Image 1: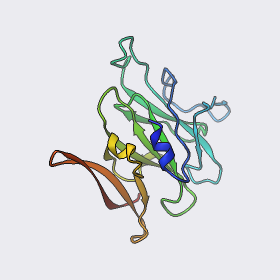
Image 2: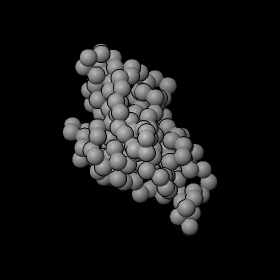
Image 3: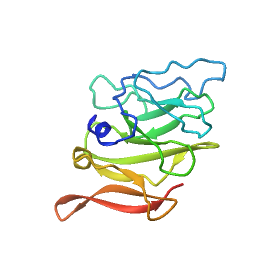
Image 4: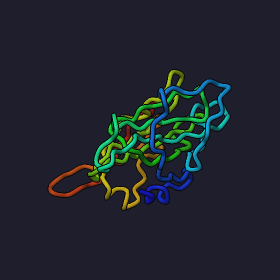
Length: 188
């Protein structure tokens, strides 16, 4: 799914994830522990404290058929910063991460996630922000289709006409066609 990386100017390029198993208890390590950062992790200041951290997805193990997960099909967003709690992304066998800078006020970066699944070109797109207490959706997840990514449509951008809002570009099936539409929504 590398086509998303080239369409987003000023964003960190994503890379496919290849980790086979989720972290043991899905709990961030204690502050004294060193975290091994994968080479394809995304760097940004996601908590807005002025110090960048790395984030990456740890996908579930896939069974020998390649058609199901061993256990739950949940990927875990993990960070090099032990204060950032992991985030469980359900119905995901991996995904593509993108850093968005300048969506909202302040220096906080936002994280886009295009989840991977066994089949289907349809996927919900997640834009997360880290606030005290954990990761949360910066906007409600929105529907996307492979066509949107192949056409290099930027999924989210600041809405200069409405402060505190962003433009989300989503896919919709209408009259036997898949259309990309846009709407302004408040940013959390």
